[in-house]
Length: 259
Image (cartoon, rainbow, N blue to C red; front, side, top):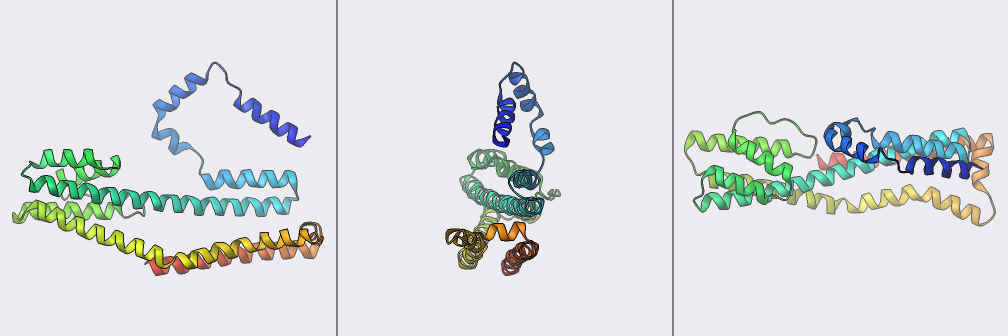
């Protein structure tokens, strides 16, 4: 009965109507404002997992499932943001290389910046590069923990230094590019060096699920013990808290290594 109600609710939500085009146009006009108003993924994941667990199991399991899902979604979002930041930094390095080559070829600054921004794989990094070169010394707005704002601040300071001292702008841009590529190589080397601990942490995080599956396979029914008995519920809460603490401690150690 519950599955039928959920299926009916999903069909109602997905049923097309005549206002679909109007909603699509409104979303297109809203743009970034609509994306900013979207609820965060950890909140959505936590509420969804908690609601599903409340239907299938006990309220305690619903609370634990919602918390674990929210934490997992937050970790996934952080990894995705870090990967996007790494890609933006790599795109900025490519744009710096193109800018340096254009300047060495004798192009004017405006033409070189326009060509480098157009050749940049990431449009956001290309636009930021153009602003940093055309307005050297201007404050750069922070854009997160990916390091792009810091690299743009270095580039802006280097361009301002070139304007004050008269040194070659192409050489200055090439030096900033070399520094950025060295930082990217260092980050990749750090990821390779910490791949083993991160894989071990993920493996250990999945062992409790494997233990439940093995216990059910031999007929012990550990899930019933953990959800329907008082001592089992205490053990379930303690196990989930210890699991979260272990993963958090491993992440803290990796962040200390990165710093």
